[in-house]
Amino acid sequence: MDVRVGDILEMKKQHPCGNKRFRVLRVGMDFKIKCEQCGHEIMLPRVKAEKNIKKIIREDA
Image 1 (tube, one colour):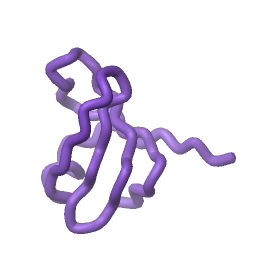
Image 2: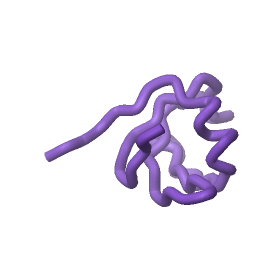
Image 3: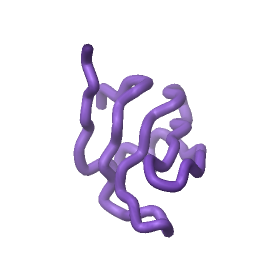
Image 4: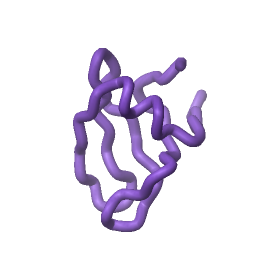
């Protein structure tokens, strides 16, 4: 799956704050993502993150 830094991921499950969109801060064996609503940063393994991605939103300029 082609996920890049700066992409916004729409996940299948929502964050406890009620938001489903996360911005990608770091990509590698682990993903570091930040909740777009509350700003909470989360590190999770690539395999788990890729299973839960519903849609990738690119902000190409």
